[in-house]
Length: 212
Image 1 (tube, rainbow, N blue to C red):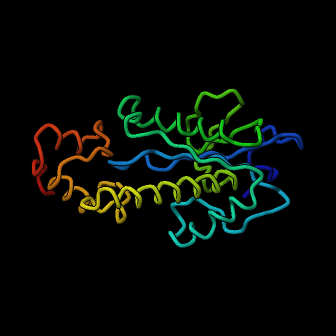
Image 2: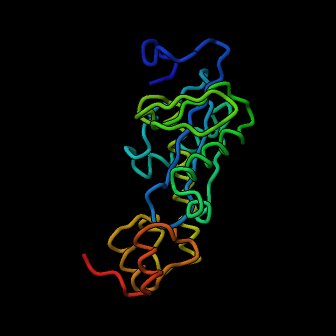
């Protein structure tokens, strides 16, 4: 779907002069690594087939679409908020910060930001929250794909530095494997200390978490 599709969002200001960017984040739930966000302004003259919520696409499909988005979009940007910022601000506010950074990094200045979800970051331009927007608005779908692929790539890089945690397999999410390695090795510098499983092992030390 497209944000300019008649009847999709009747209250959106979709005049011909409106420059709309879609914004989404990736990585709120994981126990480790930054939270990423992306902003995308699509080019109506260069449509991209197959855009949808990144969570509904295979990794291979996301990896095919990400370079197409970068090549065909009028503008795109990816930003992040660090583990330290997540622990300081909490994950919601850190996600908002990453989204604002992504919008501000765009080389084309948008006039309207469509944000996936029910909250908008504080920005200089108008923004509208769109619940389920990553599967309703093409520009948000594109942003979700860029944020997801960028974060996955970052966790593969972190795996090279901390191979004992197997970040390349679970991308920081709290899987059984990740919790097992967290119990065994304790928290790394890239773990989110404000998240309960990490906080528990920091308090009690490695091997402190009980098996499910």
